[in-house]
Length: 276
Image (tube, rainbow, N blue to C red; front, side, top):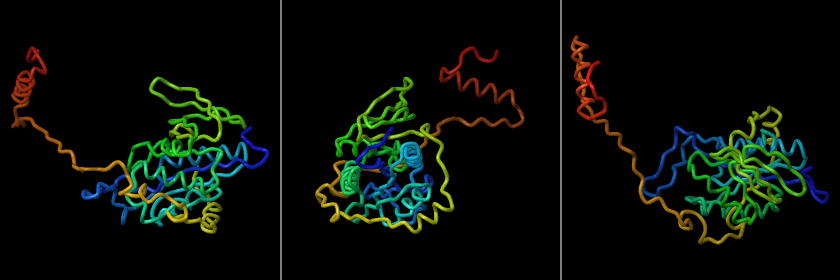
């Protein structure tokens, strides 16, 4: 059983508030996402991480806490997670974090998790739908120096000694065992996500959510935000779709149109033999 004699099992779930898919806009000057004024939701893939963590708590006891880095409005995402059943949440927010790439984000979140006292298990979503990099989870594992399993589809066994999972790969499933503490990133196959309950929503409104700033975490300012990010977006461009071709008018003569189409295809060696 996943339990400890000295302390209850502590699971932390990093989550992110992202713009709804249709509202994603980029700043062409900075290469960062424009978040102001856009409708925001909990990253859909993080919901599966929350569900996996809640099911582990239901089977083995302990607590599930979410942590999110973002603007003050991201507290809404934390309260939604609490409404789903999480025990609490922490918001990491400071203007100094603006423009952070995945390296700077994972550095900051790792510091927040240390501030929270660490964890027995971190369960993260596969990736965020706005950046689509899948790098923050592995980055967190590196900063915290814990074992990592990505693309986890099933958690098959958990005990004091460690946790066994099945990773989804291109060839099928891969069985992996990790010592605790560890970090997992999970895919949709892990579970069906539950909905927030009315009782959960009431509790979420009443739950105090600590806010951590850069000063609270004693971070290296050279590693924060856009200036502290080693990766930069140097150019943003919209792809142009060029549709070359030749328009054939039927004008009441379908046979002539077919002949013209076949001639067009034969000219480009896409068909041979003409009309049969």
